[in-house]
Length: 245
Ligand SMILES: Nc1ncnc2c1ncn2[C@@H]1O[C@H](COP(=O)(O)OP(=O)(O)OP(=O)(O)O)[C@@H](O)[C@H]1O
Ligand SMILES: [Mg+2]
Image (tube, rainbow, N blue to C red):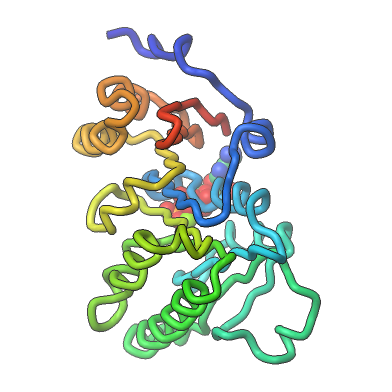
């Protein structure tokens, strides 16, 4: 098989053009971004959030890492407001409404303390958003959100928004380094972004996830994508294209 033999058959869009003109996000739709560590998931997600979120339908970005330079840089340029708790303090709520909130609990570097706090804060934010609607929830590290927090993590809460959030116009956006050990509902998102992966098992798995379009072709594409390129799949329309870096 020739490398790149598929390139002529699939539409390519520059990042800016894709975000502004091709990505058509309706409130309540779900988004899933899968790519290995450092593959550009956070950057791509923020570029999409900047387009999709607004003060009327704000994004809530859940951050678990003690430090994340991509999050810091993009939160600033998107004018998202960082808060340590949910709901935000009265002072924060009284200021002009931002298009997004970065929900980033304080870190003490003691996992017992940090994980309990993260669970309480994120849980409150997810349930409040599900109830109110008109929100986008972004679990940037959904594996950790679902599995690494105390007492079963937030699996149930994430699943609830995946299965019932659309009617409340509460979209669940998730990113993960692997297509494994995360809610199976993630794979049924309206908008799916797959980054390149050198691992053959991962390629096979991504092909299966994308069976709605073309399993074999997707498998070939993800084996061959360049750094920071993504394959975009629109599940409802059964269409796909390449999003360039
Ligand atoms: N399209 C791009 N062009 C150039 N650099 C990029 C692009 N996307 C991401 N990067 C850079 O690559 C690095 C990793 O990006 P990012 O943090 O988005 O990856 P990630 O997949 O979220 O990583 P992790 O799995 O660790 O969360 C960052 O320094 C970022 O600025
Ligand atoms: Mg990231």
